[in-house]
Length: 314
Image 1 (spheres, rainbow, N blue to C red):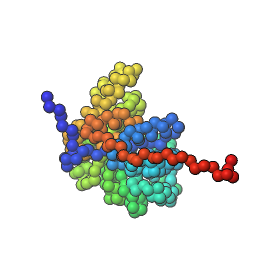
Image 2 (image 1 turned 45 degrees about the vertical axis):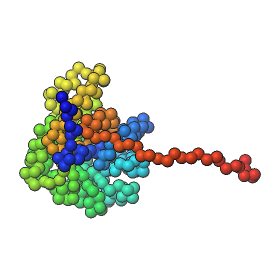
Image 3 (image 1 turned 120 degrees about the vertical axis):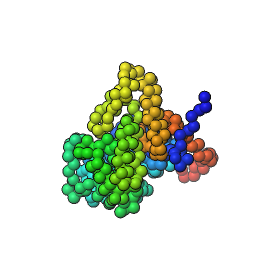
């Protein structure tokens, strides 16, 4: 039987990918993050996003990580910015700091209140009343702006059409790309695309992909985010709580099925929520045709003999 061709986009080019990282809290987590970044960088992502904690709780660590990505890698970072817990002037200062660091792309989000995911949004004093206002500020300062959206409806949204209206406002304010919350039911994503197209939205709506590293943890994330967990998904991982080797193989197979189905339906961009781990993400990217670029050839540094100490030296 002939091998199945490498999935390509409708334009004939390889599928484009981007990755999300989060700022590490400990030295051990920082080492894991940079192991992941080093592993994924050769795949040539379009950009890598860096998350922002609730209420701006990781602001300094986010900025430090973004600066290090600019200085030490070839990847282009897209720093998350949220409306929660900051005045407009605070956010503009952050944008200026990012611009000084060489960042030209941000992901503008409303953000989750520090009191809890389900708490209603309240603008900070002199803050943004909506994400669209943040988008307008960022685009006015010359940034490319991506935004988030929920293909299965935001938990606080009354209808899917309301989510589409909110997304339209962000696009009208200057957003050029929407990245979805993760999902496991591709039909929900395709339905969202149909509704968005009928509403006249014409920006890329990039599917957010979450490789299942830990099923129980993923189920908790999904519950908070309003993402459905199909019964078949739970069945795939049933009985594997104490079998990490098989669990990882199943996770790779499940994610591969999802992304290949998306590509078969014409999807040309994928955004991976990496959880600062590379192996599953790298494997999936390989399966859809991406190949690591060879490392650049560098001229070996010539070690020179140190000069003799001066007579007046030690």
